[in-house]
Image (tube, rainbow, N blue to C red):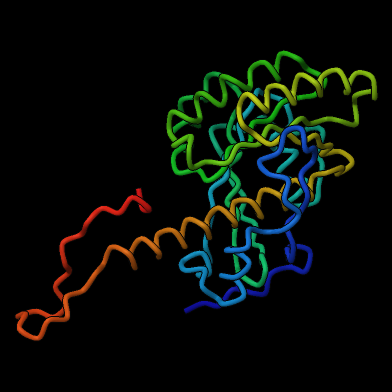
Length: 260
């Protein structure tokens, strides 16, 4: 059995990162959910603690900077002469969240229309969807609704985390950016997504954004594991009457209102 090397020191998350703006955030707590904190302290994170991998899909128009965003975080590089992604590509990033190993599988999907059908086959099973637009291109912001709609065809909207990310912030003046930010925040609220603005060129907010994605998907995964564990404890009632032929035969389950 191979043993993975220690997580890089700059990938250790001890406390939950703050949101970019409270106007469009999945939640504004400054710490992890109390149940998650307790589970980590007691090492009760279930399968999350066994090298859990969460799938993150990154979608958006051609040339909005999806690949540059991922490369800035994963490789700390920026190449302005990038080649358009054909189909899909992915990077794996390992973290340690409150002492628990956790990984993000970042799927970089093509923005060209002709590759859409290929990329969409990889959408399924995502824990988070990152919809990217260029803050200097209003049309790319408008197109985010369609990208989200396409991604949700393969995922359950109630169980996936959504992030709306504006890139190339370094190319926008303060006045220009403030105008598009209002529209972006409004659309993020409509989507029930968390809004971020970043620059892959300078690295502004990139690490903070991915740490936020890792933290929220980790929190969501642990809460889901705890819910499953509690459901099994409540549902798997065992008979202990001595005259039963099989002492480990599960009793009939009665639906409880608290579990519905």
